[in-house]
Length: 310
Image 1 (cartoon, helix red, strand yellow):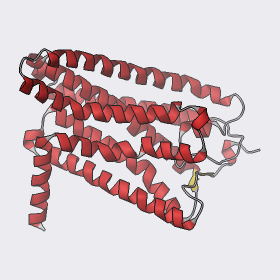
Image 2 (image 1 turned 135 degrees about the vertical axis):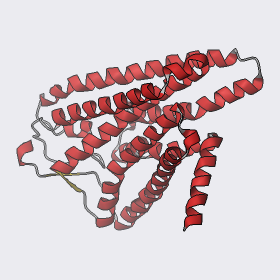
Image 3 (image 1 turned 180 degrees about the vertical axis):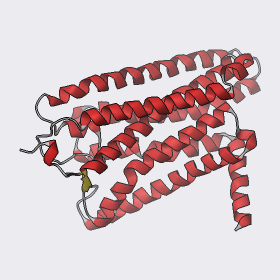
Image 4 (image 1 turned 90 degrees about the vertical axis):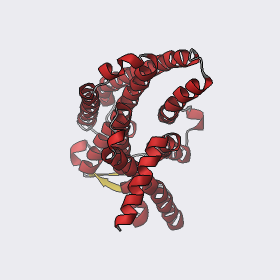
């Protein structure tokens, strides 16, 4: 038996057993992470450099790209390192840092998606009040609140999780440090201390979900009242990328944590964890850039200017 004070490192779940498959997984993760880094980096640069993109919608999109960038940089590099060097260890401090930053960026993403839903609601349902409700000061305050609440949520979970005594070894059944797998190592009944923070997070997440659903009900009702087909199409086109990103984020996260035990196995759990932690940050830039002509034009100008300079 061991306790948390004697644990210097954790053993993460290996992505593969054979050397060939480990290298294949390294290449796959590299193939996913590079486009994700490039896509989110281009969105951040295009919005920051393009004066005509300094609007609430693109301001929140820049913040979302930052959270996606941070999320994928938190989990993927260590998994790639372990696959390349045929190891599975992560230090105790490194595990705590990885858990904190993953919770921080995931919590920020949910808050930002909720705020972006409010932006679409005001834009379509209350267009005359858009400048008042979503002025530069209001946008800055909402973004600051999203990041601050994400920090508090991540700090609360990390401090509480790593204050638990660990009595069941140091092997995690996940390729990155995640709360449910660390709780499995805690002493009998000690994990009950984490139920309070988890309940708070679940309530906040459910509140965000209800707000998003309610907002889109109002948005669809308002769009269907638009007399012209062209107007309805334009309104739907501004909401579709956000709706796709929200659906991807919620569906993958929900399935990862609420999937039936009958289909649970190490390989399925690993695939699902990659699906919800790696795929959304990689696909979000593609979803937004494909449907937004302004963003595509700004990215094109940015890349053209870069190539001309070099």
